[in-house]
Length: 306
Image (cartoon, rainbow, N blue to C red):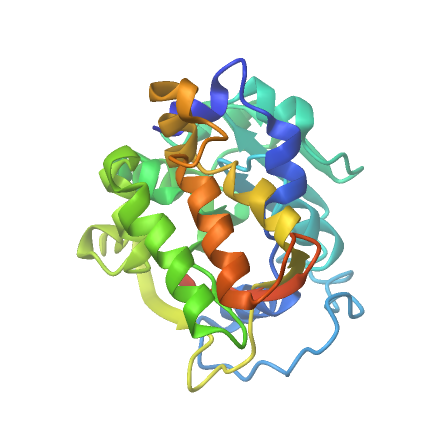
């Protein structure tokens, strides 16, 4: 299913422009774990999506970060701009995604996958085993996990951090009915077109197979954000219903539906049209210019290289 992102007709520009992005609070969690080895470290409440960067300019521990299956660079840019990494390598197997990736002077996008990470980054680092941070967002459920964990251990320095996260169905703030419709779209209308691996993001990587091996990693923690201890949202966005429609078209399961039923696209049978029609009704609006606020829960897994 992940191969759909590499198909010639996949619109990577839509993926880049329509997918939600991450509040910097998420990167606060990652960086504080990176520095102290615990998610229990206090994280300040962030009310602005663009606060001043963390004080990383003189931090010798924050030189090289690698984002695996980086897509169009949604996580690479804050790793450079907010977290202060001097060199960020975005590793992505899809040429279409790499061509649409967001340019940045501190980010290099390279061809490669989670299973050949060391070979992909070798030309860009002084030596393997010196990477400070490896991240991956909304992608690890597609990986061959033993190979990925092995490669991560190979390229991380001792004490380096592995952090990966996922998000599931969005909550429509102020409307339980609209929230239920988005869950119905995800789990009912597209049920027959979903790759089974997507179920792992609905339980936020709770399956034990997402725990990095104890032989090479320590201080493994998992949290679903926001939580009682960390109540600030790490992923939210205001958008019009028209924007929401465009976002839903980037889903791999809907891409599969369109490939199987091209003649139904745009008709009353189309699950996208059904969902948008019912959302307008639930929200009491006549068209798709209305604005809604979405919040996505995020499952975050972190570990330290021994």
